[in-house]
Length: 304
Picture 1 (tube, rainbow, N blue to C red):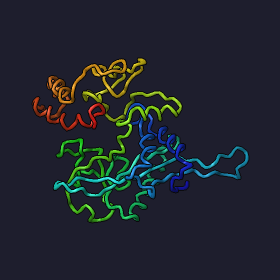
Picture 2 (tube, rainbow, N blue to C red):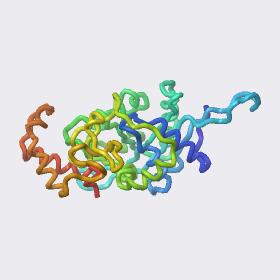
Picture 3 (cartoon, rainbow, N blue to C red):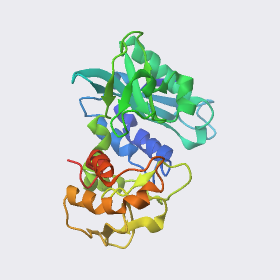
Picture 4 (cartoon, one colour):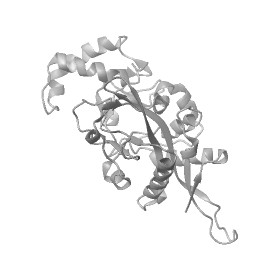
């Protein structure tokens, strides 16, 4: 295997690899390939840390031997943490990191990531944080970000968020500070420009979206209702399933309620007794509304 910087000629192959690697893994379908497509022109993108892993051609090129094939990719991005005193503190993140399905669980992902992290250290990058599975990323030096007093914007400040991880690359860079991290806006490009994403997605072979075990929790992007099966979802104008919105908010390509975000929060708060059945500690209606004021602006319908 060879690891090198991505080149322009690799773009489509890498985007297709990313789509194959993430399809139906964290959600029905995926958007990571579009994030990558758009990120290359984002000022936060770091071209010096944009790596591909390729399987080198074997043999002499005769008798049907294959050419070099890209089987992995990772990119890095500038980020920031808002310290408790309001200061914007420089940090960095990475992803998507993709390994072709045929090469997963063979150690290639860890090898690619460790190589990239070593290069990041050489560039003077002091701190990484990201969302991922601690079972895998602990082998690359990551631990829960909460242990470093780095909080995740979408979770309660005191929560130990199991999927939010961090690693200090330069000892003393973080220096016991405390602050809150929000992923760079570039990672939300598919939500902010859904029509452009759909047009881009249409240039790839059609694949079936599906719910499957192990995906991240999915929520209606209008009311926040959990989406756990196809029957929970709304429908598009052509009758196909819309995996972004629930059946109570979206039908036949249209929202069923013409309302503001605050009106939707007020509407949802009437179901607080049902919500509390799944909460470790019951909330009052006012506590629930306050929590939704922080959560709803991240939903696609209300994001600005």
